Image (tube, rainbow, N blue to C red; front, side, top):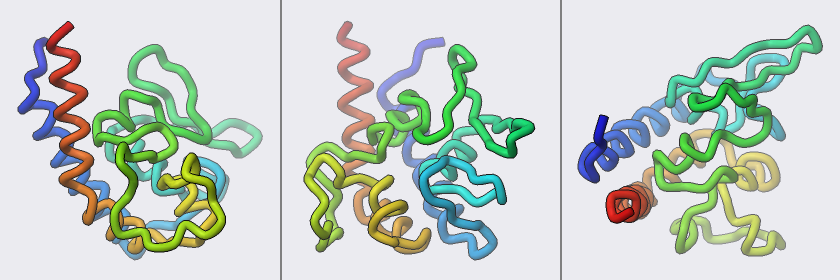
Length: 154
């Protein structure tokens, strides 16, 4: 199956919209430090894993892991690269060129200016993270477009 640039952009737009809506769902529990916690809460990147259709498994320890779509690898703290890239971000929620609308990253170094830090370190709640993603949707889609164009050039 050949994926065109426009297919990738369309998927990204739909996935980002679904992610924003899920983060604004008042029934979703937020977790920190893991994609999915023992009590079923999630970090913002865990919500993205659900939106991407990844399955999670719960082990006897109570820990959850997501199963990757390519080789079946397990993911506990960061999503698979293909899932993150499908919405134009890195696995820690980094965005090329930075996240517009985040005025204060505190004392975090630029390498930590990502969604994982907003969720785990800076105390942003899901609706606030949804606002950041919504503000940056065009930048995210542009990253998807650039990545898809590069893949087609190979």
